[in-house]
Amino acid sequence: MVEATLWHPVADSSALTDGPLAARLLAHDLVLWRDDTGCARTFTDRCPHRGTRLSLGRVVQHEGRASLECPYHGWRFADDGACVLIASQPSFTPPASHAACAHEVQEAHGLVWVRLQPGDTPLPAFEAETDPQLRKLLCGPYDVATSAGRIVENFLDLSHFGFVHDGWLGERAQPQTPAYTVQPTPTGFVATGCRAWQPQSNRLSTEGSWVDYRYELTAAFSAVLTKLPQAQDGYRDVIGLFVCPLDEERSRVWFRLAVTDHDSSDDALRAFQHTIFTQDQPVLESQQPRRLPLAGGEVHCAADRSSAAYRRFLIERGIRFGAIA
Ligand code: FES
Ligand code: FE
Image (cartoon, rainbow, N blue to C red; front, side, top):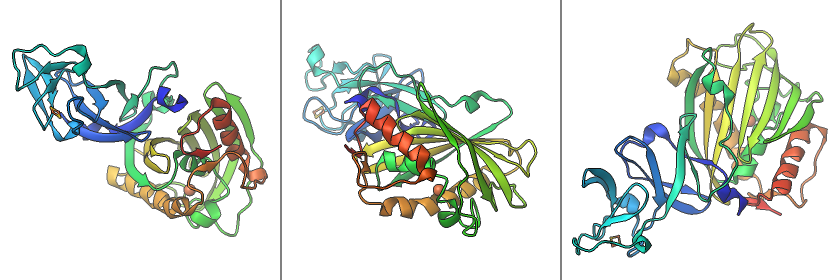
């Protein structure tokens, strides 16, 4: 499965203290925990002994090193998954076959990322993360009863603003979507020349404004939006959408904000994003089928150029999780 070779976000870095913390990715249960150096570790959430959830266990010290202890019979697993203690047979040296199934993990953009199988695709880029002029903040997670593809497609969609976000990101009286351009990139595509009339583009806007939009698909289930409101000189919002495909029809969503608003409180910035996304969520959860139909069955118009490019991208890359091909 191609998706298993890609990096996906599975948890907020701040939610992973010592652990263990249960997570889910691509219909696969995971346990996350931190080793002595504070590095995140992840295993399949299943003890090789009798299939118990390791996330119900605890992180303990074993011979001077943090290890994960199973809640059932107390077997202990080192940070690479190797079984280092069978509590009932303490003098027995466990063989390699007794190891927990470890996966690659790293942290970026405020999130813990996992890939289930080795691959050569890098983590989705979010260049705004290192821009010192921008303030960063994580919003979410939101658990949404639909596929990751439906959520990405909604994020790329301009022509719903006047209806779903009336009075905020659009106005019913101004539903036209001006033409825009879509060009392929190594990781997906970029949509430029997008414009939308927005009564309340961001928390600081005081009047309606045309807003220039740029969208970039940075991975199968990640995208970055840059917003430049014409009425706010020098103001810039960069919003990363990072979706975890929990199951084919269930997803967990985070937004990484990188904004020039250094005045609003964290709560106020999150509240704005919450208002917008909870307008999207019931519409997203109403869409049938929940899986993105790649093989036809829905019709398109010229405003859907990004959606069409996204579906083509998934088809070309062989990504089928949460899709009907
Ligand atoms: Fe985990 Fe027995 S099931 S130690
Ligand atoms: Fe929306």
